[in-house]
Amino acid sequence: MPPKTDNSSKLPRRNFLARGFKVGAAALALPAFARTPSAKAPLPAPEVKPFELDELTLAALQDGMKSGKFTARSLAEKYLARIGELDTSGPALNSVIELNHEALTIADSLDAERQSKGPRGPLHGIPVLIKDNVGTADHMMTTAGSLALLGFTPAKDSGVARRLRESGALILGKTNLSEWANFRSSHSSSGWSGRGGQTHNPYAYDRSPCGSSSGSGAAVSASLCAVAVGSETDGSIVCPCSANGIVGIKPTVGLVSRAGIIPISHSQDTAGPMGRTVADAAALLGVLAAGADPDDSATKAPGRKVAGDYTKFLDRGGLRGARIGVVHKSYDFSESVASVLRAALDAMKHEGAVLVDPVEITSLGKFDDSEMDVMLYEFKHDLNAYLGSAGPNAPVRSLKEVIAFNEKYTDKELTYFGQDLFVAAEKKGPLTDKAYLDALTKNHRLARTEGIDAVMEKYRLDALVAPTAGPSWLIDLVDGDHDTGGTSSLAAVAGYPNINVPAGFVFGMPVGISFFGRAWSEPTLIKIAYAFEQATLRRKPPRFLSTVDLSSHF
Image (tube, rainbow, N blue to C red; front, top):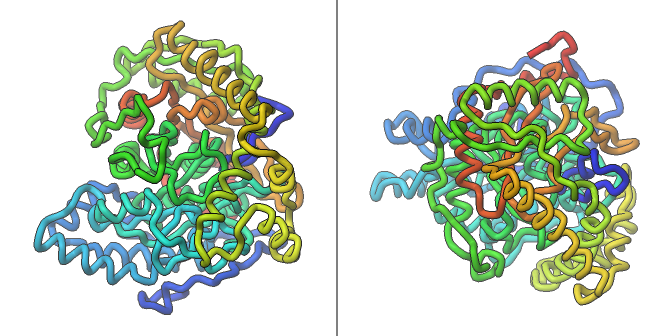
């Protein structure tokens, strides 16, 4: 998702980036063109039945399969039925864009393997949803939500999909997203795509799920899966995690393979885990990050540090003695969000953290224009390279052809907002342009050398903390997203890790905080995030309301 260029205190826009449900081939099909949102006021939320798998962790699901209570097939059937009840009907969250027609067959094979050889690891037999820009060489499409790519299936799995399959995870389906990971228009609505329609927030149906990993965030929060994969260029993991009350890890660029994921910016793009607990997100990160990918040079960069099993850093005492810098400057949040932050800081101090409050990062707000320039250049280059090598199955082969497709089908693709970012990117030159090279150098100097690295060295910090975003805003297809503040850009532009953890609520809408730090510091951040999570336990499942309950004060 591209950043706003007019005010550094606002969150980047926006954030980069079957009824009755009998399980069978027919029941797994979702419509190619999801319904468009109604202009009518949302109906009262339907009654949501209790669900056996609500809030269950990866460990609980594995224990259930070990004891014989569950199987991979029974888990898949239960999650598929729940998707039918909540996503395609009932509250109609519209978070899943396509289901895997082979899911139950794959589940059976994973069950047979468990019986004969034992589980491969913590994700064996676990149903996982992945964002619809993550390529899969199966019967599912990979479209980034765009009708221009309808019918497209890559010739081979993305690095992320391959790692999931190797771990024994069951890819249950693809999630809806902000189309093209929210890099099409500067007036977009997060969670809307031409193919998938509008995803909704499970806490209040008329509120945005944020983006661009909107469907992954909403689906995990609503327990439509155990964990999900999202992707981020600037805020697209941490913002939907904040808005949907879940945990998300935006890794250091290069820790997780980018190969086979429809790109925006190779200097900032990364996939990452989304789950209801830090432990679940850490377990998924260990699967995604294992080993270098020959198809992604960033995973072979000197200095790359992979921990293998990230769950070994889950330390209940992880805040004790941790030096954490509190970032306030240029983040314009409401008093209600400030109150959530104060309570979070009090909890950290109670757990023994040493807070440096405030810390000043003088480079904040000075790289907004250069970040956008870099993304425009890299989007054109990276997308053309991706589509150009996608093979004869690709319906479009360049950014220019995508623009032309949208202009031809304006009634379906450009109904609510345009493609000004596409047009601006198409005008950019090659990556040898001095303007691009200067902007990239400026970004890294201000976000890394004079930003995160400098302040952490100066104050001898283990991590930085700030509110991730404000509470979710009303969905607005007329004017687009209404920013409520956000802090993702510093870590995003640096290419450094960032973890969102639920921290509180504003009128029942979730608000998260972000722990971020130097490159490859995921182990330290997980340790701190887990200790904070366990000390506060702020996650509460959604109530599937039609609108915000103004009497709610939790």
